[in-house]
Image 1 (spheres, rainbow, N blue to C red):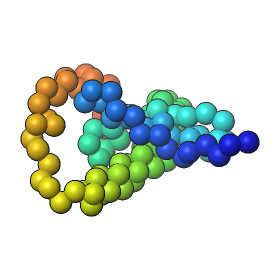
Image 2 (image 1 turned 90 degrees about the vertical axis):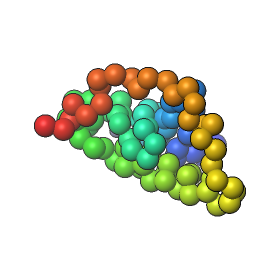
Image 3 (image 1 turned 135 degrees about the vertical axis):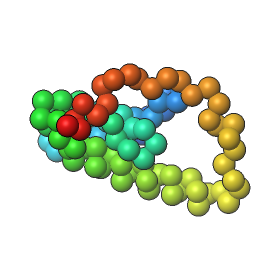
Length: 99
Ligand SMILES: [Zn+2]
């Protein structure tokens, strides 16, 4: 049986999200990222329990490591061009957990 990667980083336009392997290794949760912050996960702990779940923590570490790697790959300053046309953030679903 092939080993599944623990994380898969996905980029769609300005959206970055991670597929994070579940602890049972049978499927992936989707964790939405806003830069280094995880804004949501589709597991029950987050959706029903409004917890900052392990998947979100894991995705945040993975994104931090990824950005560190990118930084190390190139000493060139990152162009602001990357930021043009930022799509609107997806609305109100983030941070209902803060209360
Ligand atoms: Zn989760």
